[in-house]
Amino acid sequence: MAHHKLTGGNLMEAGRLQIPLTSFYIGIEPSVIRLLDKTTRFFVKVKGRPVLAILSRLLGRLLPTGEVITYEQATDFIDAISVLENTEITVGPCICQKALGKRNGTYVKDLFVLYGAEAFRRADDDHRDLTPEEAKALLHDLHEEGLVPSFFACMHSKGWAYVLCHCEKEICFPMRAHLAAGGVFSPGPDIVTLDKDKCTGCGICVDSCHFGANSMVNGTSAVSLSKCYGCGLCTSSCTGEARTMIKREDYRNQYYPIELVGKGSTSTVAS
Picture 1 (cartoon, rainbow, N blue to C red):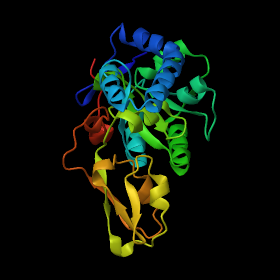
Picture 2: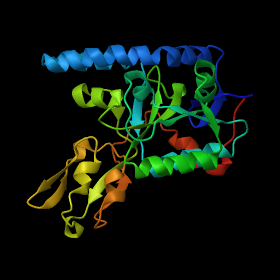
Picture 3: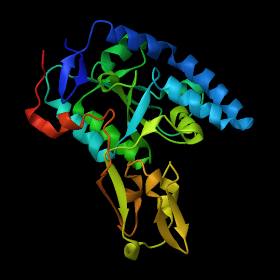
Picture 4: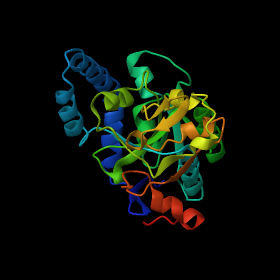
């Protein structure tokens, strides 16, 4: 069975140590999250956000960080890997909800992909294999729930991308840590554009954005582009169809396999 990592625009077989190391981390991740959650809460309480910002960037070199994508980009990725031999998808519980003992919305929603599928199987019995069709159906439900799809990777490396998470700002530790100190999420390939003439003033976009990019000014929607990470949730919920997603001009690819997805059905696995 081939277990893949990303290398450039291709999938390569993961190294012998990559799967066990990631499996080990997945096993201890609940404890890591509980410890970091307490640390973050402490520094926020004592107004130590500058210290948090430094810790966030230092730990980001080892611990998982994410790149935000749209629902459409997530489904494009599933389509791209579905035609590749021996590429698998496994779903497990939200690690943050599991670690912190809290529940909100869908619980089983972490999609382990590429070599991460095998790493998760070795670390946790609480998993289920998905077909590409089942994975896309779950992605749709999570999008309707208003969650942010994000590719996560360890070691700050695209080759260590292993899970597609769906984040929110109430329980999700990476999201809360990012909002407190930054350094956890990178903006995705797209950014929102707004046609104010079509805005109905409903304000749904303000509630749908987990990054605080949207606001209401004199009854009309406004967007801070510097805060837009490109999840697209505000576009799909816009009642006036005043918002669309466009390509981000200064996009710097972190983890999303944009080259692989672009190849579509012509993608091949290098051995």
